[in-house]
Structures are given as structure tokens and as C-alpha cells.
Image (cartoon, rainbow, N blue to C red; front, side):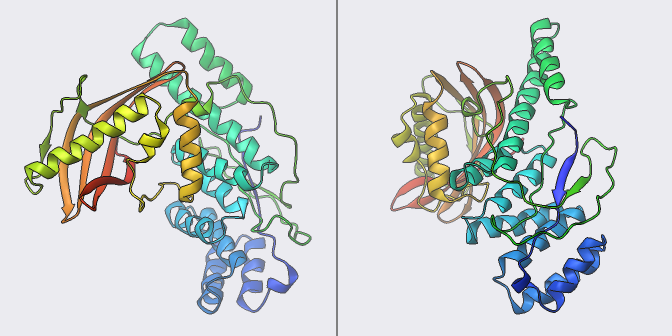
Length: 362
């Protein structure tokens, strides 16, 4: 498999072009991305809801290596147009560039919920599987030096995918709608030699295709969402310190919620697990709450066994009804193990502390 990032320019329908939007497309076609961004911003000032223009802005920001700005644009697109798979795909590309493979995986799976025959997402998802496996083998080698079996497995992944130790190739989508008009051809962009290569331009959206065979790597549904750090010791007793702002009762309630979350995940009691989250919970990948819950149901119940340890929790308060807890999470299933630092942010809803945000902090 080639280690390049395949990228196609945005395909507009003929009716979508007008004034600065047409100028923006011309600028994109010749690689003048700064001018394209200026033209797109002018057009969006007058037409803020135009999906094609917003998509093209995200693509232009990507080409300018303004990845965080592009993530914001594509995240807003998947919120406003959840039926379009291409913004999800490009979110995955950007997440993968920065090593955020779990978030990339979630974005691709969200694209496949509505478009299961979207070939680009299937191919990219296979690459994300391989990247996650590669990262897991890297950690295993550090923990178990000299284990030839681990090194052989990592070499097998590298041979199958052609990847280097930290590279995950992905394809950027170029169409903001699945059934776009005839695409405009564009010259290929040069490929860089850095670990994350530059895009090579394609000229049309990927046609529906059969899902490619998966690589021989651990099942992605056995890999937890990586977020984390600090412990509840076996038996449920906590070692904690707070910022001095939370009352003793609230601190105990926050830690009790953390223990409920840990215990229900370990027991694979998915209903109780999801009940620990606030109705206002914001999934980190920008997917809808319903899509996120569907993904979590699969990942919580899929492994034959799960054991979660939470170590050294540290509790603090951000506002009157908001608190956070940071801890070290140790995840073990029958097929995968990991250790991460995690932060759960909680809000007090009707006297209950519930999780409103979850993120990895180290």
C-alpha cells in the first residue's frame, strides 16, 4: 500500500458557483490556497450555511497546514450536515495526522453509519486499525523488551501496510455531497518526504466499493476510547486531592461517580455505564450523541472480558456546578491492554454529578 495521502479537490455543482466562490475554486485548482481562503471567507460572509463552501474552506485550511482550524470547520459540518460522510472522513485524516487515532476511528465509523458502502472510509479505517496495532506493539516492546513474538507481529503489520512505526496513511475526501456533478480535474500536488506525506490529488469522489479485507490486527472494537489518569484502588477506595474549592460532600460524590463509571465498564453493564453521562455530554469527535452511544455499546460489550483500574484521582472544580477528575486509567480486555491519563469533566444535574466531557491528557 502506498504511503501517500490521497486528496481530491472539492467538487461543486454548477449552480453552486458564483462570484468569489468561483474565484476560490480557480485559486484552489492552481494551488493558490491563501487567495482561495480569502475568496471563500468573502462568500461565506454572505452565505454562511453553504455546505460546499464550508467544505472547501476546510480543505483549503488543510492544504495550508492549519489543521486545528480545519478540524473546527469539519466538526461544524458534521454537526450541521450529519448525512454527509466526506467531512467525517476528512476529520479522520486530520486526527490521524496528529496521532489521534481513536478519534479518527470514531469519525470514520460515523461516516459508515449513514454510508456503509463508502469505500474511502473503509480503506482509511483499515489504515487506522493498523496504526492502533502498531502503537500497541510499540508499547508492548517497551514493556517486554526482547519479546521476538511482538517484534514479529509489528513487522508483519509493517509489511502488510508498508507503514513506518508511527505513520497512518489516509485519504482526504474532496466532495461535500455523495452525488456531485462531474468533477473538475486538477493537477497532482507534490508528495513530501516527511513521515506524514503530502496529498496526491485525485479528481473524483470514491465510488461505492466492496469493503476491503481487514488487516490481521486486533479488533478495533476491543480497543477502548483513549482519554485518561489517576486511581481508585482495587476495592473502590480512592486516593484523591482537590483544589480546595469543592466541598467534601461534592468531592465524595464526584469520586463515587468515577467508581460507578469504572465498575459498570468493567462489568460490561452498558446501560449503567451510559447512565454515568450527562444529557449534555459532548462526544470528543463531533459525532451525534446517538452515534456515540451506538459506538460505545459495541465497544463495551464486544470483548469477552474487561477490567478497568483507576489510579490516583485528583479532583478539582471549574465553576459552581462543574468539576473535574484526572486519573490514570489501566484498561485490560481479553485481547488488548493500555494505560493512559484521562480527564473526566462533570456537571451537577439535579444533585447528581454526571460526566459532560471526556478527554485524554497524557
